[in-house]
Image 1 (cartoon, rainbow, N blue to C red):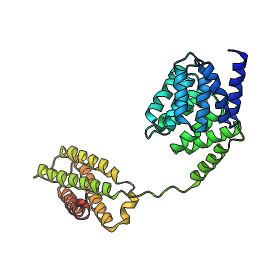
Image 2: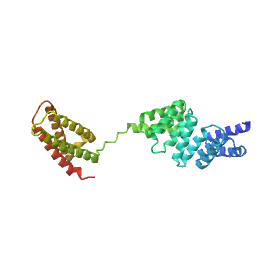
Image 3: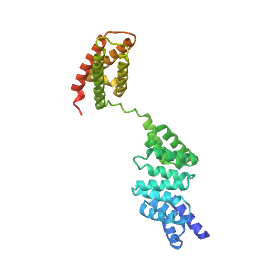
Image 4: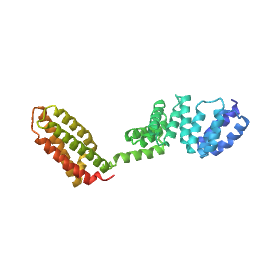
Length: 316
């Protein structure tokens, strides 16, 4: 590379870094016109266009650099950022992954991948993993931790986000964005959690299933236990109790079930039915022969099931 070309590239990089990308473009255009196969010059030109928000021109310059012999991953990174600015997020992700493939040890490739995945509705987890890898590859680079903080913030991982932003500020005390984001994280961490809402539709569906199990299973147990139950029937009712327990887990949070009177009565009846059935199953396994507890359990289930139908069974 000739000395004048080196000087132009260095000056263009300085201008872009100092917030003067238009002047950098004015320097680089004559250079790429005279040296159209200079990959670094095209990359510098693409970077300057990106800083100006000229994504189309940046993409064109990055594509020119891709066809030339030069740094293998830089054109892909620039193309990924330009495509992301243009709203072509899937293509941006493809280009960013290609940059990682071409230079897997370059932390900047993982930063770009995390940035473009941030705009994808399903890319939050992969963006976090990429940003975390970038911070591990470059523990002294503030940008890697800034992007990690952003990715963690989107996942509501307040602890990781706060640590990442603090590290970014320590590495670069002038990083205003990380300071603002750190304040956001601290505010959200100290905020009271949103109150848990009762999913009434899910509750009524679970109660409907629970009542069907208790009424149907109890009726089968009554028929099977006539005229005198045996301990073997306890295995059936024990399995029935376990099924009821699995369904009952969908009723959480349990404390909120008693906030509405109709729900409280229904839940109480079905709970009483299940508890009586459980106690009778244990007694049956130890040799009890009475059927009265099973009858009482079944009656509670019938009444509770009727309330389920009236209160929520018709609601879809």
